[in-house]
Length: 80
Image (tube, rainbow, N blue to C red; front, side):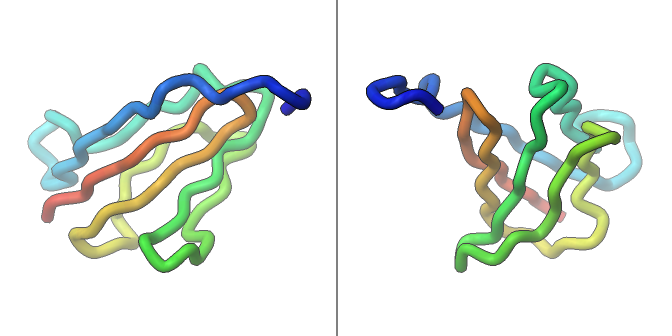
């Protein structure tokens, strides 16, 4: 990120990964070729998406997560 350049406004995603085909995953392909890092609410890196830009939150519990890419950041709410 260049000095003085601000990230875009925060976006929020809601995931309900229950297999019904609705809000089961997030497609971060808009971030290519940059990675997307997903952190839990304590600041621990949960996932870094580099080659596959789909996140389904299967390995997580219901919680709030945060994502960061080169030009965008936001929040993810996972409800299981």
